[in-house]
Every structure is written in C-alpha cells, then in structure tokens.
Amino acid sequence: MLPRRFRLDVSPLINMAKTVKSLHPDVVHSWGHMACMAADPVCRSMGIPHIAGVIRRGSVYSWRGRWPQLASRLGDIALANSQAGLKAFGVPAKRGRVLHNGIAPERMLRHPASGRPAEPFHMVMAATMDDRKDFPTLIEATHRLLETSAVKIKTTALGAGALWEKFRSLAGDLVDKGAMEFPGRVDEIMDYLDEAHVGILLGPEGWGEGISNSIMEYMAAGLPVIATDAGGNPELVKQGETGFLIPPGDVESLVKYLLELVDDREQAVAMGQAGRRRIETEFSVSAMLKRAGEIYDEVISMK
Image (tube, rainbow, N blue to C red; front, side, top):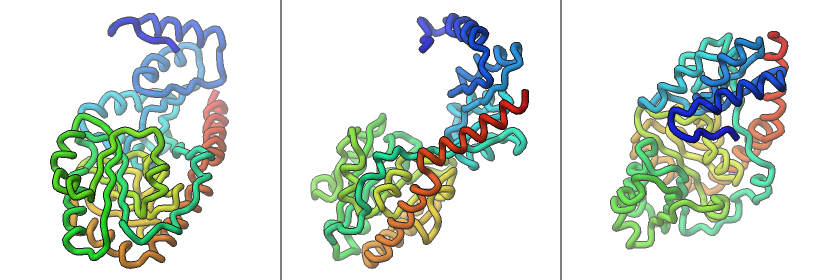
C-alpha cells in the first residue's frame, strides 16, 4: 500500500516509480483511474506493458465516470469487466479486453433454491441505496403484488447508503405490514438468498452495471433473476432462460414477470438452476483466472 498523506501528496507516485524500476516486471496491471494515471508514464518511460483496469461500470452515468473514461485511454490495453463497459467508455476493439468477474468457490456451496416453502413469495434486491439503484420501482411492484396476488408476499431490500432512510420511508406502510424489510448492510447476503425465490436488481434510465456481483450471487444461489436491461446485465441474465430483463422503471413488466414466477414455481426453479450452471461454467474464479492469464500473455507479447 502507498497511501496519500494529504490530497496533493505525490510521494506514492514517486515510490511506485521506484518500485517498478527496481522490480522491472513483465507487465503492470493498474486498478482504478488514479493508479492508472500514475502508472502509465512510469511504464512508458521503462517500456513495460501496462493494463489499465479502470472500467467497472456499464455506463458513464455522470461526472463520476469521467475520470475513469479518461484513464481508459491510457495503457496498452483497457480492461473492463463487461462488453457493455468497453462500449460505453468508447474503447476501440483493438485496445479493449473483457475480464468478467468470477464468483468465489465457497459461494457455490449453498444449495439451489428448489425446496422453498410456497409462502411467503420472497423477493430480494441487494444494492447500494443511492441514485444509481431503482428501489422505488421495487417498492411500487411490492404494493401491486399485495393487491393482485393471493400468495403472501415478502420483499427484502438489502444494503445501505445515502438514500436508505428515504427508501424505507417510501415503503413505510409495507414495513408496517411486514411485507418489506430493510436490514441495511449485512455480512452475508447468501443467508437471505437461502430463503428467497427471486433476485432483483434495478437501475434508473441511463445507468448500467458492469458485471453485477449481486446478480452473480443470486444465480449462484439458484435463483431466477429480474434485472434492468442495461449495462452488463444481459451478459449475465439470459432472457427467458435464467430470468427476465426489463426496461428501466417499468413497473408493469416487473409485476408481470413476478406474477409469472409466483404462479409457475417449476419455471422459477428451472431458471434458477440454469443460472447456477451458467455461473459454474462461465463465471467461476477458475474461468476468470484462465482469462486473466490469456490477457497477460497477450500483453507481454507486445514487448
């Protein structure tokens, strides 16, 4: 670790340059836009290939994405965790590579969601509670399900953030009825997924995930997924096979697909199992490591 002692402290850059010069590695892989901007001139001066690992989102949502977008222009290769990220950040195909996230093996030791009690039908959305996540649509869908479904409904909104109190207040009547809960930040999401029937991840117009760890955990737990059709979500969720993709803010579609899963539990279980198999074969840690090795070999060959 080379922490900054104050905002404009340049000593980490100096120390990093000394370290790179001393080690003279075959390749430098930077993570984050600040590390990338610091590493690039050092690597160029020493003729060391540089992988700029700065793209973790599937969209440039606001000013928060501008620095990573600038940093993605640096390095010999720009690395993203989704194809959507490369496209959103405008990285040319010849420079862009994708290294999908991989889910840790211990997360796969849980049992698929095939033996859940019929009620309550339990929906889980795990996400940071800020303006990049669409909890209001989830809350409205829960209201509508309570009105239209004969099955008991329960929604768990996992996560913390600046808008936690706002979202909980918006769902106040649901909380009072015991139909919705806001546990805040938890140590182990899988404990909640063991009791769930479907995993949900919603984002607003203009926002796109990279490769969502929440969606991967839903799938590893054997749950069907309903997610916003944006960013890297379609790279994980196969429409009608492992879950459903819906337009941003589309309450009608969300309620429609939830009712479909409520009414057809065999379909829900089949989708969950298909998602789990997809994680095992395409988004495991071993698959991620294999792909990382291929990328490193390719960059080193550029010397």
